[in-house]
Length: 149
Image: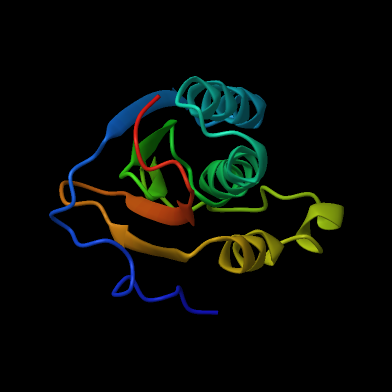
């Protein structure tokens, strides 16, 4: 599966209307905290309903991937509201996990997260971080709130 191209999304020079970022330890229990922080922020921004619910699921999938598939000590999540799109970016430290970290039952679920992200988002992709080790996986959701509350 390849990420959807970024070309049809907003131009790189589009300014953020609102921005929020947080950092959490790369542990399984941080995934629930990441979901809560995203839901709280989007609610504060006046983005509710389907957009908020979808963002919650997307953050859960991307944050979980960073925790499970890298040996990161921390994961950073960033939300950017650009008027008609919300961009969710999850930054890990990029160190691949060595040795078995998933239980056997969990391996059956592997790979489904990005399929969900692909199905629910207008665009998504990934790239290496500019400085040092790490990877950024991002996804965009279209919303109908053009102005801040």
